Amino acid sequence: MPSPSSAIAKIATWYSQKRFGQNLAPVDVTAASPRILIGYGVFETALESARQMDESLKHLAAMKTAAMVGCEWCIDFGSMLHHKKGLPADQLMALPTFRESDVFNDDEKLVLEYAEALSRTPAEPADELLERLRARFDEAQIVELTATVAIENYRARFNHAFGLAPQGFAKGDACAVPERPAIPT
Image 1 (cartoon, helix red, strand yellow):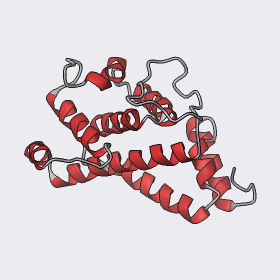
Image 2 (spheres, rainbow, N blue to C red):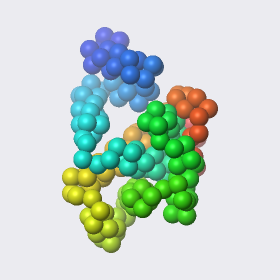
Image 3 (cartoon, rainbow, N blue to C red):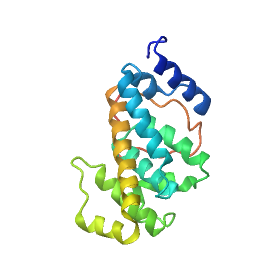
């Protein structure tokens, strides 16, 4: 937990409670290193305010990444965001079988395929996949999409390292499922 006397911890706690109704466990952990928290916050804010790529596509990419890496905290939080954005619940359930699913359009399937490729270890973005992305999206959109997948991989791996469990954000709503076993906490 952050030191209650840390100014950045106080700001982060206030913001988390105001926006989400509770402290976010990853923020509480990160606040132990104020410089890392500041840098992380700046990156998150920049990514959230970037508007070249469609928000729903970026969100689907983040959810696919969380499911691929098996971050239960990320899935819980992301599922809540999915519902708040008014996106279809059946998309969350169809993430593992997106290629065969009729709930995704061609752009969504392409974005999910890209998130899947970048979330493997090692990352495997084939040249052919990048060509298909470039045929549909401009470079700024691909940069935003790539940053979205990269930061979700960071979040998931950071949360695994600290054993962060779901905080109940999804509250019984439809929730994405991990596509690989989660690390026991």
